[in-house]
Amino acid sequence: MIGALLWLFNTVVDLIIFLIFAMVIMSWLVAFNVVNPRNRLVSQIERSLRALTDPILWPVRRIVPTLGGLDISPLIVLLLLEFIRRLVNSLVLGGSPLGV
Image (cartoon, rainbow, N blue to C red):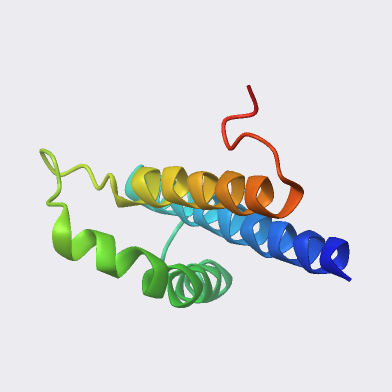
């Protein structure tokens, strides 16, 4: 039972990480005019990604300002997610959180 819950937790964390990476890549593609944000499909994908990732990123964005126009909140959230994943896995499995 605990193994299944740990698998579910790790899968959800992986999904959140994937969505954050997809959102970052989409924002780069829009910013560098690789894709047209006026395209209906592109705007729908961008809105969906923002709707899924903004609730996770906004608390960090309120605390950490942008650095020269560069938003580092996705990087901070990714580091926090990996830290939480390692902490939970080590507590459940009884090993060292750093894997050492």
